[in-house]
Image (cartoon, rainbow, N blue to C red; front, side, top):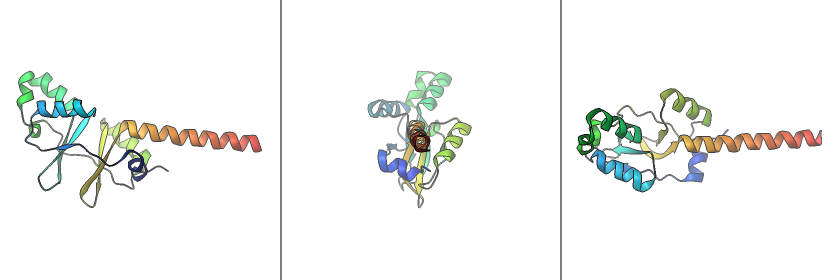
Length: 144
């Protein structure tokens, strides 16, 4: 069974972070430059303060207009961040992301941010698992 540790071993542990005092416009620029869908908001001590996604920015601008882009991230981020660990299995990730209707899960180990997984990472690895299972079945049938 694929775990978060295996996913991060292949994709890397880089996580784009920002502080809660950055503006929504600065966050939008960062997301665009890095070609990512969310940024983890961290406190100076490294603890997770929240997460800000493209959706959060769109909702904020939709509610308050373009003036919202000057607001601090902390006013619009998701504060109750759902996380996972290195030992979390792919089925847990799929269920958690589907139920919560979000696309990014920060990975926490020993109370520290250790990586991030996206729904794209999960789908990619699940498809690889299915292909491996399919190939094993074909080989079994061919030798039976």
